[in-house]
Amino acid sequence: MYAYWITVNYREAYGIYACNGILFNHESPVRGETFVTRKITRATSRIALGLQEKLYLGNLDAQRDWGHAKDYVRMMWMILQADQAEDWVIATNKTTAVRDFVRMSFSKVGIELEFRGKDENEKGYVKACHNPEYQLEIGKEVIAVDPKYFRPTEVDILIGDASKAKNKLGWVPEYSLEELVDDMMQSDLNLMKKDQYLKHGGYRILNYFE
Image (cartoon, rainbow, N blue to C red; front, side):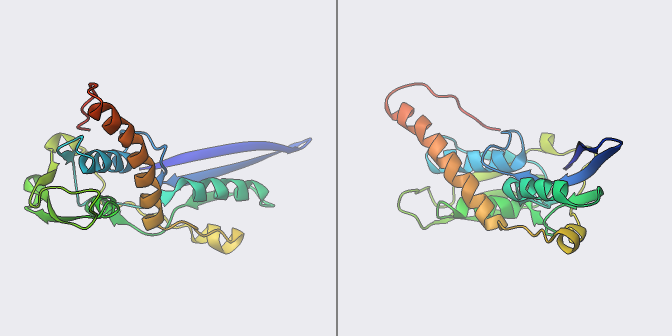
């Protein structure tokens, strides 16, 4: 969804400088593990490393306005430098389906996916592996839909309009979604390689399915 961010600065003896920011989905390698973007990059890394068999998701058609947290924090700072306190929307003005975020994550390890089926019966299969370091069985099912992840009040599309931030403060995102996914995947691959090392050493590791 999106977050509200409010800051108050006492600029003068008799005045309050208060800004309200509406932040659409801002992601990074330290995003909480239960948020769908981090859930996807963690699971993709584990599947590529042979630590997990499958990733279960909800509505693959849901579209979200995802941006890099670095861009959003920069905009927070810019808001505080503005001469006048106002309300602001921070977003990328673009949407991407959950399914496409999954595709992008797997592509970072050279794995191409193919989706077949519809709604609750849709599944994702390994179509090709282009990176010799990450090889999975062709045709292996790695994505499945679990109805329990469908939200009762699901919003199909969330998109923000940050034109005011661009026109008045000159803010535009510096990071593309491609760069965001790359950043998250590199971080989670390094994290999960620790589990791989422990597994190869004969130690028991937790099995994550969410």
